[in-house]
Length: 283
Image (cartoon, rainbow, N blue to C red; front, side, top):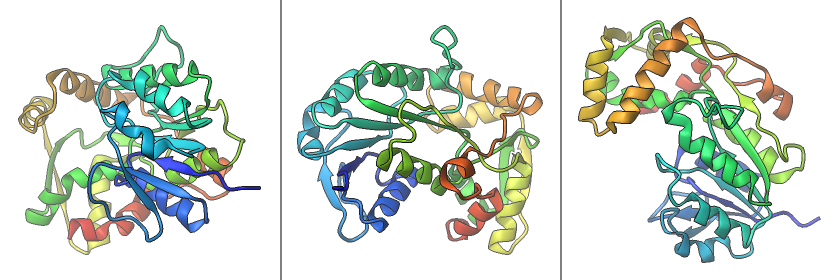
């Protein structure tokens, strides 16, 4: 049986990059959609294109059987044209969605997940074979603390007690590869979680263990955090959505499941393992 040719968008990101590496290591023909120069495994074809310009995607999609779709924007504007372009070439799309997406159209979830909800709807209506991966929070979001850790050893953030089952990008990628290369996840929306709830304060401590020096979590107020997010360029409506949604998780945390192990045969990696894998980013 001929191996499918797969196009990976978001190929320079944590999840997309891991999908590219896994497909390439397995001998699956893989093509990376890039907007500029990219550091990719030798033998991976890089093709320029931009999801913000559907007309630029023709060369990248030519001869492709399946697409791993990472949507890089905070709204679904233009998504219908991108999905239409994919449908003219490929037969399957695996979409990196979010655990926050509502399961019913009348319950679309918080503002931060509205575009994921719309993307899922468009993909399901496209006639393509599809899978929507719904991971919980990414462990790699902790990289946002890297500069503070390197320079001060102190992370200033709200909600020290916020605990989430953060997922290692390699685990999300392993499920994505299964969805791209087998028929077992067609029409599925698997909820993907890490193996345990880990508080933000504990995350910082585990990063400290990984890099061999003590770190401190300095808890700020939600108002201080909102001010910092706006100063960093976050849209006001997203700031107003993200922080209250996270605060609710303190008393009503996300579920923890064994879906990664069920789908891949390997237990989900812990946050401790993620911190060890990324220690160099914090030194």
